[in-house]
Image (cartoon, rainbow, N blue to C red):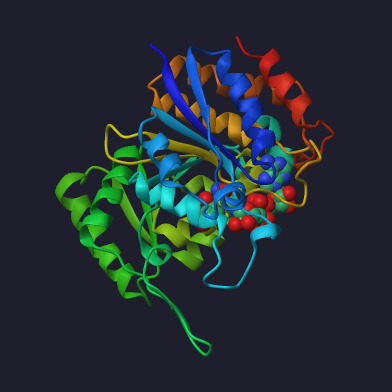
Length: 343
Ligand code: NAD
Ligand code: IPM
Ligand code: MN
């Protein structure tokens, strides 16, 4: 069976990391790739970051692989100007991708590449389950010359469905992260998570951690965490912080999933890295690991997913280090190292 994958290289280093990931996937099966213009590139081509045509193509695919969007060319504080990031938010919303999974499992070969001490990070294996289509990202925005506001809203239904994903993924414990000491949305979050827990997942341990404390514990005792279940904005911030446990933001993959049946979206957690774009030095491993998640969660190809993860691990064991990990390998060299280790 041919699987249809829409690729959205996007901006900055996006095209530089998606092309090698496509090369990798081609080694693993019979895939049909449909590359589409997205983000800033799409603003340049048609005035909008996500066209209806591209959204339809994504809807009709088996999975979507994305690089990154954004960059200084489209950075503006004008509320009426189109932004590349609107394309990403529109895609997540348009595909109903409310569950964002960001696994953080430092690879032993990289323990010493992290700014944190090895003893701190050894054995860390956590999953950030981030709510992706609600909260302050999608509430009403207002702006006058003198005032601006972003509404943060959550419904019980939105919290219930992401809580089920979090509890379902837990091996031992769910740490639900909120700001219930201040925010009304967090109080509804906590109440709803507690109810889903007691009614459906009483065997899983549940704790509630305030987000500021969670940010601290992520670096002081990351091994403590199994599943971190949290809302959209907190999950965005905590996952970049957690990325440093793996050595670099260039290592962290993600899967965004919706209701069963629709295509998932798979992308590295990092952005378009305008500071290094065009230099051939971007780390492609987060995108390779996102391709592994695409194989596993998007296409149910577990053997192929594991093969990608092992190849990445073996390449790192063999000494592969890109610049962000303190080494000298460029994107092409890193790609070759992983392809050479693919069994
Ligand atoms: P960024 O993640 O793009 O970069 C942060 C730092 O990490 C930079 O120094 C960059 O060089 C480095 N970095 C990131 N990915 C790397 C990789 N694969 N290899 C080596 N180094 C890497 O964050 P930013 O600079 O805050 O954002 C730049 C643009 O990207 C903004 O327009 C932002 O909106 C956008 N962005 C997009 C996504 C996405 O498309 N999913 C995610 C985050 C940010
Ligand atoms: C991410 C990014 C996006 C987000 C931006 C680019 C809209 O930072 O995927 O983590 O905030 O969700
Ligand atoms: Mn982010």
